[in-house]
Length: 358
Image (cartoon, rainbow, N blue to C red; front, side):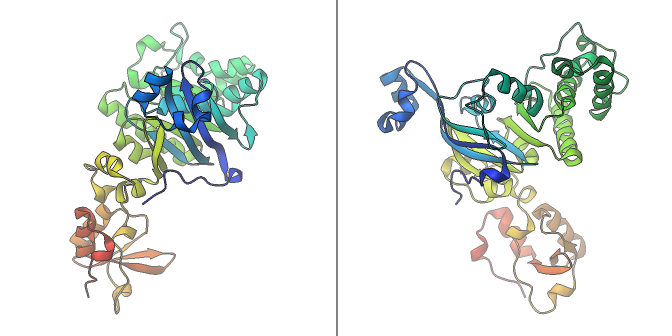
């Protein structure tokens, strides 16, 4: 079972968050300071104090180059949390740092620099300027930064092409589909070359097919650029597709933080277990979860898979060849996956109870 959160050391992190609270209401700062009030459930806290704790005692780190997903149902606190990272919403207590610099102690100038240069936000509502062209909308952040007209238009054109808006540079937002408008918003965020991109449910208003296209666009951009991303969503399939790690929130708290494989394969409690119940395990869990030691000469034959291959890919390989599959890394056989192990993963049978097949 995973701990609710597993912070890394601040030196490894872009964002480092510790003991963060955001309480709305009268005398909000008294809630996290009082153990009795801090322990109250949402309804009782409102009844006794008139306050709502949107974020409760949250700690985590965002590693450089990762896609860190925060997910939860409506009202779980995820959007409030991401807005606290750049103080679009002021936290009640706790600490936030970016590259080791204390965000809560930043003055107005440093905060503007943070929001303009270091962390760009992509919102659900596109926020495009209707009277400006696609190119000028993309260039808007650069204009705010004081970049000259020629340079900012050149960079805007570069990022228009990067997100698939070639040939649309002179259109206005009203002439674009929802997916195309969101691509403009993404290009605008990328154009200022931020250290980290913050996404607040950016695709939830899009049609399913367009949403899938935009998810794939984010995956492609991350693969090509390796940019750090914090992505907020209420959609589990979206979180599993995009996230290197996922923080699952409930009632303002992080109830589990881990990789998609850890979330699906080892739910921390009944809430998480119910959340992931309908996820096709074989499409998320890797062959390590089905692997056993090689017996005899098994390490010499059978299809070879990398340790990051999914169980679904292993099932295809075993079905196609009729042989057990080898898990191979750097030329070394780490183990073998057989039909019994693969079926065990799909059925949710713990690995310790499975028998090796000779």
